[in-house]
Image 1 (cartoon, rainbow, N blue to C red):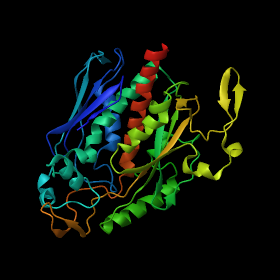
Image 2 (image 1 turned 120 degrees about the vertical axis):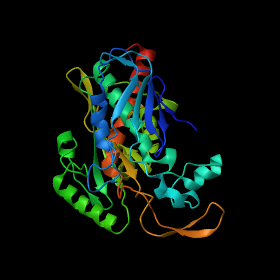
Image 3 (image 1 turned 90 degrees about the horizontal axis):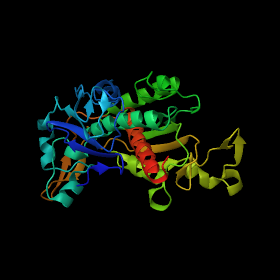
Length: 362
């Protein structure tokens, strides 16, 4: 079962949802980067459960511990291990799932592929696995800002929940705006509507999906490789590896098909000594390589698979049966998915920056 992501900046996540703990090993991090547990904790706090009334009530502080790879607040260039203990696991809530497959979850496919599965909260298929990704993403952001781009900034926000969509000016969007409400939408008025819709779904034992939009500023020109390792291809893989994702688009995305080439092309011009584009329908990447403009993409998340409503399913022994969701789950994954999207994007940018340095000597 592959658990490693990246080339020069590699991460391996470990642990199960209701096991002793979860975490990550980061390999390939340059030495001398300032990093502390508090740097990582800030990001983990944004994805932890129990942070508001519209997310899972599982009571976890998600306190991180750096076990290796740092000394006196700086990275050593050796593998960094970050561990988070599980403290509020309740595997007994999932006992019925030991014999019954949850609709649209990974139970059936895991069982079919491996011949066994951890039914306690889904094991590795649980979104709790993403703790390691977010911890590693915090380190990746430090590396980028220290060695490649001091102006690097990554901001993701919830742009749509079901049919409620925010109208956001991405150039003016700030982290403060996003963190000012529990759904992490950049528009306060729209956020209130989203929150009420999520509360309604939760009260009905149902769930909702939506879109997380991300803008990355300060990316150096030249990251990414032609053909198979295009920057947008690696971003797409990173995003689609997150739990509950069902779609990825960059720049104009699917709406670009409604334009002609003349309308869609990003014309170049000189801004002092810098080559710029008048528009950014390419989303900051052309030919698989970053062009220095903001990278903008969107990720679609499906409604949470586990719902508190009885549904038809089958048992492990092949019998038709019924199952009602148990345990503690997000009625909408989007608020906690925001830091996950930012982290995975940071991992891709950091990895490509290190690869570009190795290949081109930059």
